[in-house]
Amino acid sequence: MREEHLLTLEEAIRKFTALPGPTMRLTNRGVLKQGMWADVVVFDPDAIRDVATFEKPNQLAIGMSYVLVNGVPVIAEGKMTDALPGSVVRGPVIAL
Image 1 (cartoon, rainbow, N blue to C red):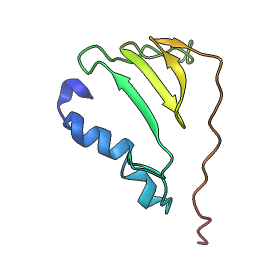
Image 2: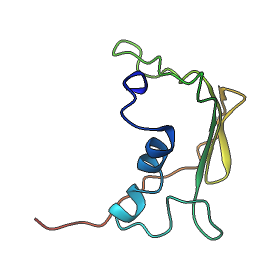
Image 3: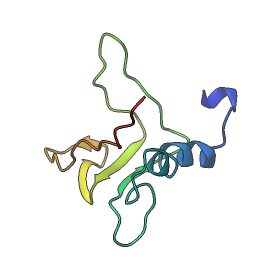
């Protein structure tokens, strides 16, 4: 999708970060602000690419330097750590 230039990098980051919180009525997620839960990803926008396949789905993306979940590194210097600080975040139940 990056090659098709459908979104700017800034638009893509907003859609993956700031937009889902309010959409799912999660008021404490989605932006870096004191008192809020935050996950942070440090990546090289020119190098990042997904290498996972159907045969090997658990491959780390290339170009991902650090991933912090609730402030704890789960990827550091491009390698997985053994940390598991996250939990499932569920939005409100919406009756149909």
